[in-house]
Length: 140
Image 1 (cartoon, rainbow, N blue to C red):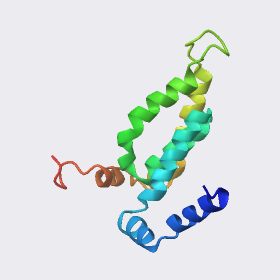
Image 2: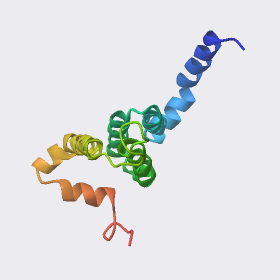
Image 3: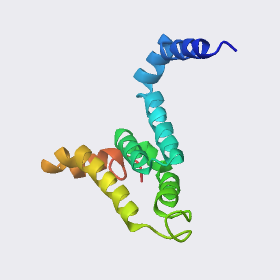
Image 4: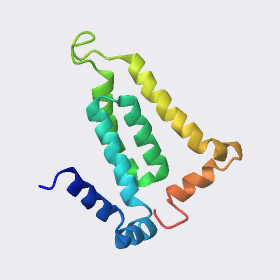
C-alpha cells in the first residue's frame, strides 16, 4: 500500500538483516546470491535475452556445481526458446544453427575463463575429483 518507498524499505530490511547475512552468506556459502543469479538467468530467458541467460547460468554453474541438477531443464528451455523460431523469422519450429553456436560459444567462453588457469597447470583432474568424489572419498 505504501508504494515505492515501502517496497524499498522492505528490501533494505531484508538485505541488511544481520542474521540472514551471517547464516546465508557465511554458513551456507552465498546461496542467496546464487539463487538470485539463477532467477536472473530465468528472467533473461523469459525476456528473450538468451545469450545473457547462457552467460548467467554458466557463471552460476562454475560458482556452485550443485546447480548442475537444474542444467538439463534450463538447457532444454533455453534451447527451445533461443534456437527454434516461433514463425517470425522463418517457418515455425525451424532450427537456427547460428543461435545455437552463439550459445555454445558463450558457454565455452565462460568455461575457458573459469577453468583455463587450472588447465594450464594440469589441475583439471584434481578439480574433477574434488567436485565429484566418487571412489576414494566415499561415494561409490
